[in-house]
Amino acid sequence: MYYTYIVECSDGTYYTGYTNDLRQRIRTHNEKKGAKYTRSRTPVTLVYAEESDTKSLAMKREAAIKRLSRKEKERLIAGGSALLTNFS
Image (cartoon, rainbow, N blue to C red; front, side, top):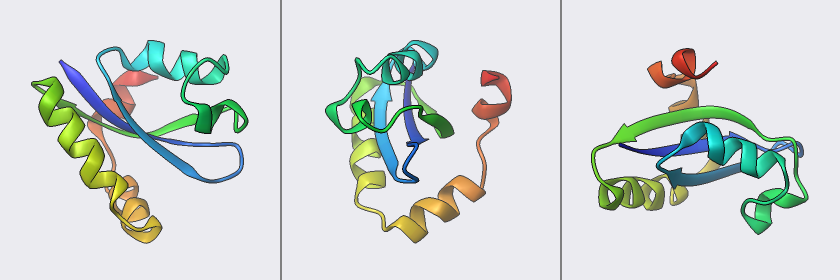
């Protein structure tokens, strides 16, 4: 199982990525070992996540989300994700 996710950074910006281990990836971001973008913007908070069956699908979804405007991302986040309730 793969995941496409959005985190909100400490400066209010969003970062979108994909992973096969969501908990570990968020931990890595917060330990300043993740993407260069998030290293100076910790802590990050997971605000959206969705599952994909394959890495390829997760990567395609990541690319699609990255093309969205901030307002479109906010609507996606507001729509919620069942994964977030299970993630806590």
